[in-house]
Image (cartoon, rainbow, N blue to C red; front, side):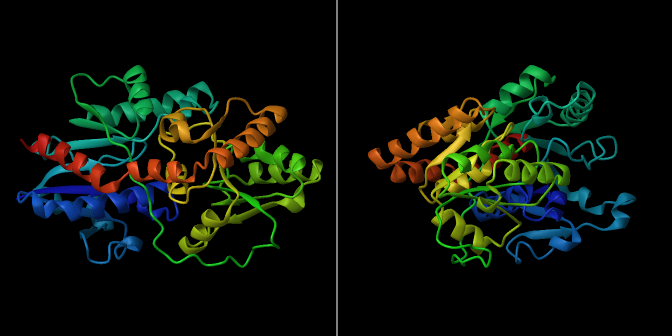
Length: 356
């Protein structure tokens, strides 16, 4: 029996995309492994998330003394490092038999307008993890092309495995913060400069009957403050609601009841919130940056600039097209194509190739 260990350290950041990535990979791979016979999966989890898998996956709880002694590595055949800006646990000199799989989600610092020094620092860290890896998974074709352009991968295999859809199983629950019966646009994700939500404010000015609801951690206080100031200047403050993180059941309600989903992000390696929104068959309005056109395909509408007139034109034309063509079923069908069971099978193939 060969043991694969998935490092879930970043599950300590609840409500994050990486939390759900580790959770879904762990559950989906574990569900398929009994068919393989020769593979077993263990999750290396932070203490606060030791119950996250509800006993469905064999979990190793991270301990402070693991910095000095890591007995779990003695039986490890494949270590899966799930993030390009994270850490690498195995010491190849002490454990030369362990194969390492690295998942790279994005090289976003190259696309966010970060200072050159910060871009180089991020690239050097990612390159260091690549150097310690035996194979690489990228979560989109865009990310793969970015990696091959900016990093040295040598002869190591670089495989694309899309993320699956994070389905919201909880029954929708009406949020306490709902104000009136006005239609609303919905966005979700960390509220910071990269997510670029402030560019949507002119839509509220052009559509005074609409609200903009954004759910997610208020990640950058200066950005949040600037966004509120801009809303005041446009006299649309009463149409903007920043909820902070919301429970899964409330997120389901927002996605099910919004007029449209909006995601004007500057940089995405995949765009998990977009795939999550597809499950509800609503109009999708995205930026045309990085991986978003790959994920949204021809069932989304894209902002090619963030100029006020263009934003309103794309929104009004997109809503009319969505209604005229009855695009809801096509949106949901595309969402079903991003399937964790299919992705898990692809991960298992990569694990097996490293062992063989």
